[in-house]
Image (cartoon, rainbow, N blue to C red; front, side, top):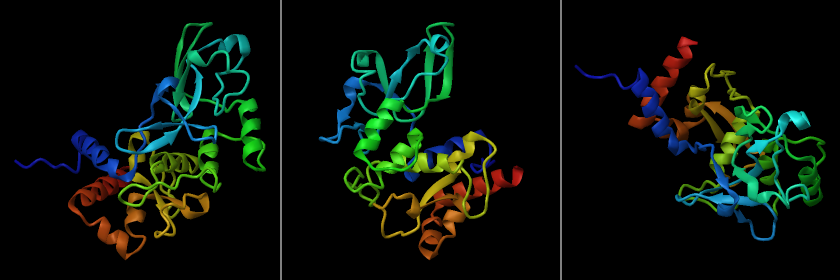
Length: 250
């Protein structure tokens, strides 16, 4: 009997493993000691073993949320609020974090954090932006639209070394909804079927939002002849079949 690798739990795991080639970012947090200050730009990054890197914010993992009536703030710079307590902070490459309340002693997971208003003020002094509020995803994407701060180093395939984070942040701002066909996964375990596509394919280092699209794998595969050929390999064919089955079941 031949096992059908395009269906069932094994198919989902296989699909996620193969999807690593499409720049999936693993949400993580780190001690600040492993972070590096990016030259003289004043923002922090974490380098990965494979050569890639991503930007991080930092926050208190234990916080008096009831006393202050809010969740911890996500810091993107060393404002005066954190200079004295940075040794108690962890760095994170995503705005969804886990923290423990020092008041109720409860642990909260996947909590979205807002950027510290003092850090945001410092950021706006460095980069001229018009919007009053900003999420962590906005921060990451805005950095790529500034020639002084954007990443220009690339991997062997021509993508910037921080593209996994760019891709995740952009897809989150689009609520993981395909900008071509309108498909949206009804389960987060299927988010890996959503890709970030460069409109100008010969400009993979151009990660400005105007050059990006959130596409389901099926629409991504049909963008043009080059993508159709790229998605015709055996592993990509399996992913496409898995996606079509998931889409039909919604």
